[in-house]
Image 1 (cartoon, one colour):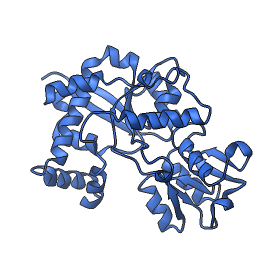
Image 2: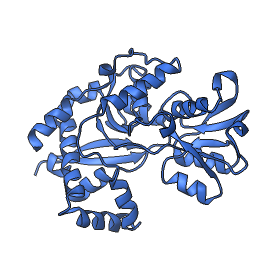
Image 3: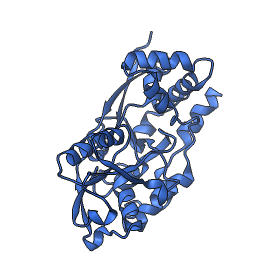
Length: 298
């Protein structure tokens, strides 16, 4: 048997499709073993991707826009990692109105990327402008770190992705709103690679996507999904309900939602942060790997 090729994946939260694919042997059949790691921040994630510490990232598309070309590598999105996204704004108990956030520090991952811009857009809709000094942003890191910053009273609001939003509410914090009021078409995470790595390792990149597609079928096919959920919940030890909740956001196809990606690009331009490689969406997207994978999987 040929030795499996190791593919390093850096994520914010473990993907149910990757977890399921490992259990089902979807990646092994493509000659791959997936070594996944959870990041503490998008800065760590994207610097590591550019440095070759990891081969692929599951990340917000805005991080692709912000980092492509920054560390000497073009970065492109190749497939969706999540179908839709939940971006709830959580505030500390003492915050009773949007105006109570004036003068307060707010927790974000990085101050100039991804959900920080979403938070700015939500606050803008409620009359608060960062450029006017109405609030400040603190780069606290990923959702667990943002939650911790709020719990300590260092910051007063943040976008907290599930399950950290539920934990914060259980601890007495308040759900104040979410991205849908201003950005209803904001997309979920994408799988991203550097062009250099992808072009030199096309077989492995398409193999990863073939593994994703195979695992998705196993997870979502009514004939096998119950077995898949039982196996995943047994491995994770958290019961079947959270597994099923995560599967509800699994993309059915490897097709990127270009309209959603355009929303992300337009938001960055809105705040005067046009990506360094320009405002042409095609610069940051390469669907050829997914198209090649799908041809052989149909």
